[in-house]
Image 1 (cartoon, one colour):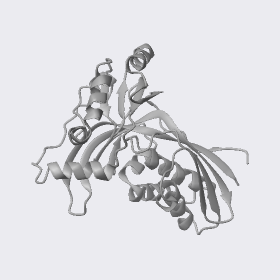
Image 2 (cartoon, rainbow, N blue to C red; image 1 turned 180 degrees about the horizontal axis):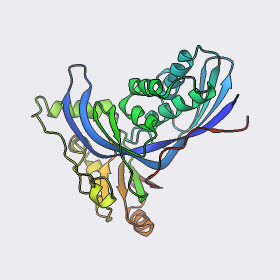
Image 3 (cartoon, rainbow, N blue to C red; image 1 turned 60 degrees about the horizontal axis):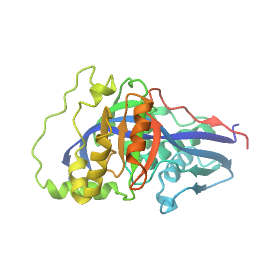
Length: 297
């Protein structure tokens, strides 16, 4: 029986994001496309006698019981009869409250890793049901896809082949944006949103970063930039460095850009500097996520 596993939890981009309506439940209907970045948190999970322990190396993440990795671990342990516990060591590399999905990715990675420690006792379809209950972004990460279209609350997804990996840059400002706040700002500006037709994509729309760069934008940009003009200024500075694609990351606050060549990405870093924001060099991911790997205890 495997005693310990290591798994990477990758960050994501929203290639476009349309907010269609607010449900009476408070959830929102959206259309988007998710894509993975190589940037990733690292989790090491070890079998214990009982319970769920979490140790975080990095920024504070709030109450432990609300952490998606803890909640995901408990879901799988409960489903398998709580025959053992798990100790999670989480090394945070994905910026928090930046729109990159780090917490959701941690939750998805934990689902797969704890299930592997349990001998894959939970069927894959049930594991995906757990992911959807934890959140729409968790469902994408749990699928393992490098790229997927998503609609509904973001939990209805269709996997697509990802374009070739390209150099990417993530600009992280000192401002943090909580997703519930961003949705509340959108709601305030869209009390009675006009009906919108579905986005129409042809087969090649997501096949290259050039075609992705011609897709629609991110509906969060208008409201988040309105609340934080300095984020609009950051977006404009990044856009001026010549990327093939640039967007606010999810609900913010980070801005991501994709470039044709590493030299262009590195030149952009030189132009932007790090006085007003932290810059993270990464690449887009063209292959599915790697699964949990055994480690020595």
